[in-house]
Length: 112
Image 1 (cartoon, rainbow, N blue to C red):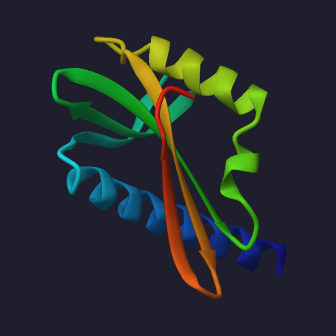
Image 2 (image 1 turned 90 degrees about the horizontal axis):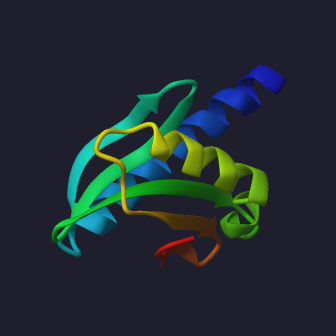
């Protein structure tokens, strides 16, 4: 059962990343990469907004606030991973995808 839950969580996360990519593209972003590896870390989305390179962390939750999953420790890891990229992104944004009875709510928080 734990394995099934883990698989369902991975599927939900990938689905959320796809929604986030589409959401950003509709707002003029160009997605340069998905699940970009740098060292031991990973950047969910690497995008260009106008002339700005942005690393995007996506948090998706079915029930609850996905922003709560972006802890100080997670922020440190994302910043560290983004710093390994060349060129280095100018900022890190968070896309929070909440799935609930009313549907899907996507929030974009620039410069977290």
